[in-house]
Length: 184
Image (cartoon, rainbow, N blue to C red; front, top):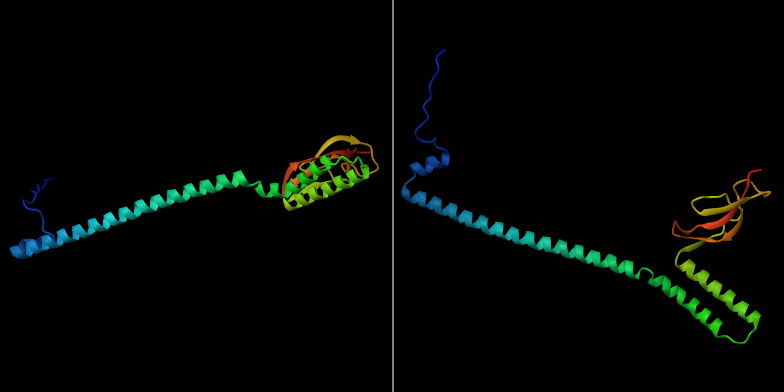
């Protein structure tokens, strides 16, 4: 088989734009070059404008991120502030009880009961719920069994509460310490 040799063209093939430039008179070629330079300058200005917009958007994003971090840090730092406001009257009542030197036990007991109600009210406002599970089925997520005792109740039922537990929202702050009815 014979190989055909192809010779490369000596001039590049003409594209429609380059044909116009080659066939156009010299004045039109300069005019076209001026249009290209104007278009290039306009595109460079637009690119610079977009770059400036990009830099501003990046800086704004960084500012938003920094502000959000500050807000989260302040929220952590002052989260307990409203709950502390609820506890201040309880502290006032306790200090008043300590300052009382009358020695009247009935009056002291009444003051302690009032203070306990104030504390319960503060817990309610702070969304703290007391766990007092006497008679309930034992729940290892909310209760901590100390011992099993023989009882007439159904097995695995809370018989006594040694220390009340507390929850905030749906999270256990402290499980209730309980004794549980032993299987018969």
